[in-house]
Length: 181
Image (spheres, rainbow, N blue to C red):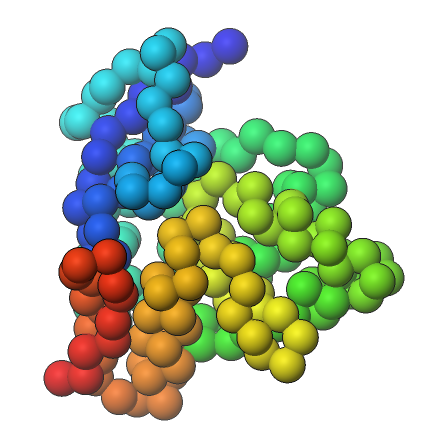
């Protein structure tokens, strides 16, 4: 099995644990969340190209210069999870869909929204594969690996940018916010 490398990257929404394998991004986790753990077999490599590309694209996104990430991904998951994540990656900037809609987009019954939600929650590159754009019935914010405050900030930011407002992402004191400029 290829060696997993890792680093930490600062972002407007807090520090991220970023992982890679064979020159591809394999994980992006908010460092203050329970699932952001460093495996003893991983090797720290702060200067990897994939980490520099990831950091640059996050800066571009947060400043409003980028709406879609185009990083090489090396995701590990079941065929079902990969189908869910690939479909999430096609949700447009500033748009949201429900878990039921997502189930239908992958050719499943809307009744399989829970299974789709579980797969969504296991997305190893939150923010890059924008699972924050998947919401509950009636647009309710449900589950996000980075916490609901971050999910809300990302959606508010994208909503503001998509209608032409100037906005930036900020994060502090464990709360995310949208700053209009």
